[in-house]
Every structure is written in structure tokens, then in C-alpha cells.
Amino acid sequence: MPETIAFTKGHGTGNDFVIVPDPDGALDLSDAQVAALCDRRFGIGGDGMLRVVRAGAIPDGAEAAASGVEWFMDYRNADGSAAEMCGNGTRVFARYLAETGWASLDDGPLPIGTRAGVKTLTRSDLGLEVDLGVWREEADDVVVRARGLDVPRPGLGIDVGNPHVVVALSSATELEEVDLTVQPILAPLPPAGANIEFVVPADPLVHDGVGMIRMRVFERGVGETLSCGTGVAAAALAVRSWAGTAAPDRWTVDVPGGRLGVRVVGREDGQHVLLSGPASLVFSGEVALA
Image (cartoon, rainbow, N blue to C red; front, side):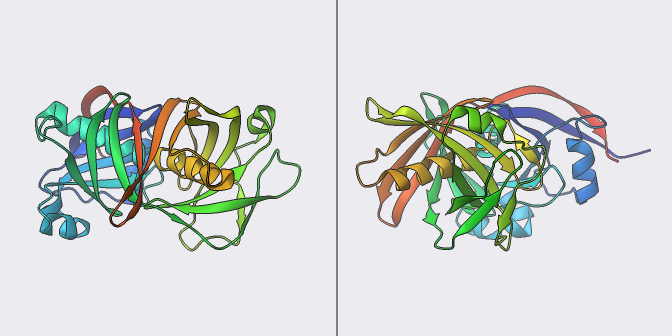
């Protein structure tokens, strides 16, 4: 008989995940098994998988464990490939830990380990807020070709723990006409690939001191998703950079799955970007591994 494992389905603004509890690191899931779990027709369905494992029980969690962090978010894309980080995933992961009683969000910031380092989460007006850490604007020029765009467009590379390329569009109509059933082409292609965000600023861009934009995203290893947390942060950072020195440090980003908040905060080690939004757990069950 196939091995049966427990799971929970969760999402953050429609960016959905199969959550697999494996506190002692007993599971060794292949890319094909993860892809089967995430399959929307033959599996549970999700944009990715979050394995809940103690940092000391997984090699990638060694650095987090050494700093005293208990839990590691082993994030895998829907095709089974490992990824550095997932902004929406961190909030869903923290919500799962709180709901199961494995950790608390009421005793101060909750640290979790990721392949992009330790991220801390706190409660916020929008649900949960994660400090994604220091961000970086890439110097290399990238050209983006996408079905539905008449000409190639320049993209700005933003690293928020994982790689992104952000493309500015001129109107909501242009945003809606981009066909993301086909993967956009990046030239040159970054070594690890990248998530690609298409953004349109609101008119006016700033309202009551808060910048406002709309976004769609194509996630590497997944396709178009209703939301991408790190992509939301990257999109806000790119528009903030384009807007110049007078641009605000607080942003509201509308994605097909809902609304998320972004803050930029100066700290001793540089500018941190923080992402806030809801996190929901939908149902739990057991499933036989492929």
C-alpha cells in the first residue's frame, strides 16, 4: 500500500499551498511526489508545498538551528523544485504553527528558517507581517518578452531573498491583456531564473502617503498565480525606485487574490522590506503518496 501522510491546505490571498507536517524530518519527498500533491486535477492542488520540519532535522536548516530557531519552512514549487523563499508561504506557515500549538504568535516575533535565511513574523492589521530582510536592486538590464505585449519591455531585477524581474505597464487594459498562460522570456536569463511581475501604478500613485499599484505575476516553476508575496514586495520596491526620492515607504498592492501591504524600514544592516496580509487554513486530511 502507498504511504499515507497528513496534510493541510492553506492560502494567502489565493496563493495556495499543501502543508505537510514532518517535524522530525522523516519524509524524503521526490520532485515527482511534490508535483503530484500540488496537481490540481489528480492531487490536492497548490502553487507549492510547505514542509513543516524542525530546523535541526534538515541540512538546509543547520544555520537557523545554530541561531536557536526551531522551525524551518522547506518550500517547494508546484513542479517539485526547491525555492529560497515564499512571502505568502511564511504567513501560512506561521498560521499553521500557531493553530497546531507548535509555536505562538502572542509571545513576540516568531522566527522561522528558510533557504533565504531566518524570517520573523508578527501580527498586523492585515493579518500577519513578515520581515523579508534586506533587499537588493540588481544592476543588470533585463528585457522581457511576453505574449500580449506589442514590444519587449525593460525589467528591473529585485532580490528579496529570491529573484524577481519587474515590468512596468501603462494601463490596466495592458495588464489584463498579458497572456501568462505562456511563460515570458527573459534576456539574459538570470542563473536561477526569476519570478516576473507586471505592474500598473494607480492614478494618483500616492494616496494619503501610501503608494498604490496593481500586479500580476508569473512564478518560476509554477506559472501565473493569484498572488506572490515576495513578488508583491519586489513590485512595490521597483515602483518606489522608479518614483524617485519622494516616493513613500508604505505601499498597497492589489493582486487577483486580494490586497497586501508593503513597508520599507531602515535598520542597522540596511533597508528591510516587510510584507503583510492574511493567511488562511482551509481543510486537513490524509493522502497516499504517489
